[in-house]
Length: 89
Ligand SMILES: Cc1cc2nc3c(=O)[nH]c(=O)nc-3n(C[C@H](O)[C@H](O)[C@H](O)COP(=O)(O)OP(=O)(O)OC[C@H]3O[C@@H](n4cnc5c(N)ncnc54)[C@H](O)[C@@H]3O)c2cc1C
Image 1 (cartoon, rainbow, N blue to C red):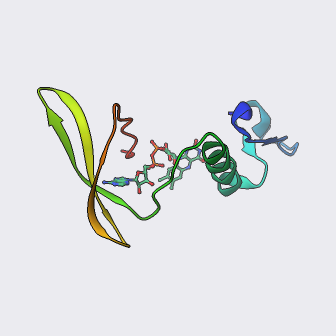
Image 2: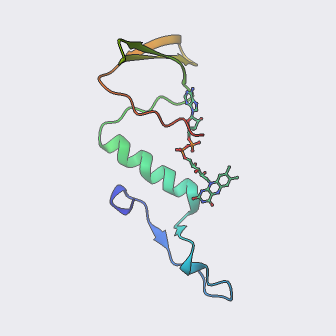
């Protein structure tokens, strides 16, 4: 994660000894995400903010495209050779 631009912060000393079990991002989780998005953009990744994937086009077991709803132009389809599903849960 450090190679992707994220920085750690040493934990404060104290009776809980959090440094043994927890890691802390310098600037918190928001700074971590900003660093990761910056790295992605530098790698040429286009980020579609506020776009909802509504369906996946899969034919004969092969992923072909994702259908999504964008705030600007509504429904659209993005074709790709591969898909990484990272929708949480
Ligand atoms: C209250 C709380 C506190 C936590 N605290 C910690 C902590 O201190 N340390 C820790 O390590 N973990 C913590 N976690 C767990 C951690 O947040 C999750 O494990 C982690 O965020 C999962 O990452 P993810 O990328 O898999 O999913 P997410 O972070 O959930 O990202 C999934 C993304 O997909 C998007 N998405 C979903 N469906 C669609 C769709 N159809 N179209 C487009 N986008 C979609 C969502 O909007 C979201 O942005 C906490 C979780 C909670 C709820």
